[in-house]
Each structure stands twice: as structure tokens, then as C-alpha cells.
Length: 480
Ligand code: NAD
Image 1 (tube, protein in one colour):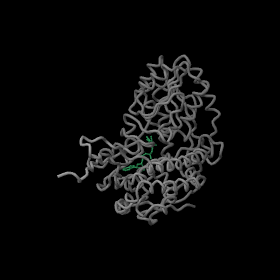
Image 2: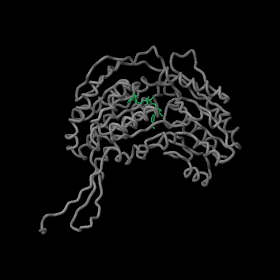
Image 3: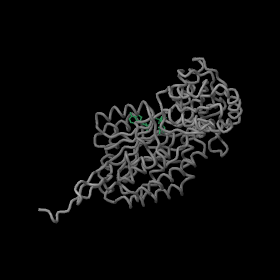
Image 4: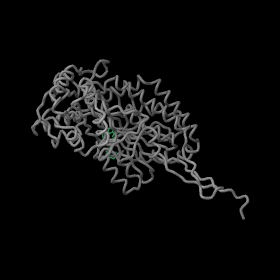
């Protein structure tokens, strides 16, 4: 059984432990982790600050080499990482395996950043002057992550933070602490003490101690809109730079000329993989009237064949949701959907025979754009079907929410595709593709309440994790 401890200034620190149970069978204990306290957070921040100058001095190329070593270590431990992530938060093993490989690929990609340009040479008015811009580390960062991508999200924040010369205090989601511990364990002995520190525990204590600390230089947060807005408000007081990635209510539009078989596959994958617990999950499907009944029939057939079961079994498509709290929240939305007049076509219930947090794939039709289930992030395997008379109306419905993370259209018309790309309010726009699955080398982020408007991943990460210095060099010789 795994015993996960906090990691501060190069030492593994114990403390009161919390037990973790398998969401697919809550009688099975998976491990324990140590909960940090406010003093631990203080020590972790002090350690990260103390380590920062040395880490900066190592230089970009050497940091790139170290990241490459971390990528190899993750590659060699994919099965271990995948298994613990599945046991801890219930995502099917095929998905957590893919996620572990993704984490390795992210470290590999950012190892390359250690070798790429970090500034520009800029013409100067005085011809003997060399003027250039230079990227420097931001300093010491808090990295606060959710539980739903226990490996990939920490990787896509930690890797760029490290390669650009920052030191880190990492606070993972409570429900993904064991995966976080394993990841940090793989990095620990190739990084100098203090460069990465791990503090596990509650948002209200450990997280709060981090975000109110004035000596940090940056906070990169992924999680709910509510906590993100709280962090933004706190950062106004502390003056710390923040990056927030928050929720989604991602729409798919099915046009009259869509390839319906393709669309059904992509909607099912987008809505049901990870049991719908993705910020980019498909949650609203806006179907043009002419193809509504055909699409609905195909969707119901496809969903009926989805295998719900133990996420450690290779052919399970839909595992449990992460916790009892999450299951109650999802079922609460199902009740609200029915109360608001939507018609339940499938799912909406729990199998009483199962000892885990399972929710059957759930489909509603006759959902109105203003209904709660069409407006709020549910974070579960729930699809709301809405009808539109035209592409213009479908785009208007798609835009009529506070979120704007990812959005897809299914069409074979170039005009419809281009119009959608132009008019949709979303940070990530996809044509004949599912809403989830954006690649690591491309900028990731949303608009409106989904994001603080900065971007993660790809080269875009340099904007958050560095600051720019402008330099002018002029020779002394030949001047009086
Ligand atoms: P959450 O907001 O409850 O928690 C996120 C993290 O913040 C956790 O580590 C938590 O402990 C911490 N936290 C909680 N209260 C805090 C406080 N007062 N101060 C500091 N930290 C605090 O979110 P969650 O339930 O873990 O994750 C689900 C949410 O994450 C969903 O809304 C989902 O859309 C979002 N998400 C967004 C993205 C994205 O990239 N946009 C990706 C994945 C998940």
C-alpha cells in the first residue's frame, strides 16, 4: 500500500495521514497520504525561494537536459503511474496510461525549450548599440492543480516552470495526491533540494496558505471557476501574477450536412471518457432540426453499447466518477434537469449493485438554452441535446453561456466551418473533432469565465513563466 509524504527542501516529511479508497470499490484501500499544514507551506516556500538563484544559474541548456531525464523516468514508470491514477480517481486504465505517456511527452517537449531562443535582437537608434530582449524566470511559483488529470496537468505546469528557471511549491488536488507523490518522486533526485516541493492537503488550509503568501512570484491554477475567482481576488491584494484555467460548458453543433456516424463517435468520446470529468468534455449537443431524430437514434444506440465497469479492466469505457460528493452533485443536476422540463432519454441513475461511485451515461432532450443543465458545468457523463433551426441559431445558443473553453462543429461545408471558427466564443475551436484532446504543443486555454486569458502549453507557456528584460549594450571604446 502506498504511503505518500510531502516533499520539502529535499526531504520527505510525514504527518497525519488520510486514507484513499478505490472509487470503483470503496471497500478497497489504495494508500495513504500525509496532510501538510500551514507551517509546512511556509517551509516549502522558503525552500523554493532559497533554491531559486542556484536553479536559475544552472542555465537553460542544463535545465533542458534535466527535463529530458525526467521524461525518461516517467516513460519507464508509465504502468505504475497509470495504475495508481486509476486506483485513486477511477479513470479507465487506457486513459491513465495515455495520460502518463502524455506527461512524459510534455517533459520531453519542454526539455527542448532549454535549447530554443529566449529573446530577440532589436534594432537600436544608435548603430553601435546591441539591443535585445531576454526571458528571465518569474521566480518562485505555486502550482495548484485539480484531481481530474492527475498526471498531465501537473506536468504541463511543472515542466515549463522548471525549464524557464522557476522553483515550485506544488499543491495537487486532494483526490490525486498519490499520483502527485509518484510524479514528484520521479523528479526528486535529479533536481537540487528546494527546486520542487510538494504539499498535499485541503484547499481551505494548504491552498489558502499558498495563495495568501506575498513572497510568491506566480500562481498557476487549474480548477473550478469559484476557486479561480477567489484566487484572482486574493492576487489583487498580494500583487502575485496569476494564471487561471477553470470550467467549461463545451458545445458541439451538428449541422444538417454532418457525417453523423463520425459525430456520434466524437460526442460519445467527448462526453463519456473520464466519465465526463474533463474541463473540455462535451456537455451540450446542439443539433439542427433536419438531422435531430437521426442523430438522436444513433446516439442512443451507441450509448447503450458503452461498457460501464471496473476501470482497471482494459475494455471498460466508462468508470466511476471520483467521489460520493461528485456523484451526488451529478445526480442533483439530473433531478434539476427533469424538474426544469427536460426529458430523460437514458441513464440518470446509479446501479445499486455496485460498490463504487458509478453514474450511468445520461442523455436529456428538450433542453432549453436557459435551463440549469445547459448553463452550469456538471462534470459528469451527462449530455444535453438542444435543437436549433439554423447554424446561426446554433452558434447563438452555443455562445449563450458564461464559459468559453472548447467547441466543435460537425459539417462537410467549408462555409459552415469557417463561420463557426469566426463566430464561436471559445479558446479552442474544432471542426469534425471532439471537444477534448487538444495537443501539448498547441496553446491551451479559454475565453470568458473559463480562463484568465493567458495560455498554457506549447510555446505559449513562456508568457506566464518568464518576465522580459530589455537590454542595451554599447561599447566604451572610441567615446569621450
Ligand atoms: P477545485 O477548484 O475544487 O480545486 C482545484 C484545486 O484548488 C485543488 O488543488 C484544491 O485543493 C485547490 N483549492 C481549493 N480551495 C482553495 C483555496 N481556497 N485556495 C487555494 N487553493 C484551493 O476544482 P476540482 O474539483 O479539483 O477540479 C474540477 C474543476 O477543474 C472543474 O471545474 C474543471 O472544469 C476544472 N478544470 C479546468 C481545466 C482547464 O484547463 N480549464 C482542466 C481541468 C479541470
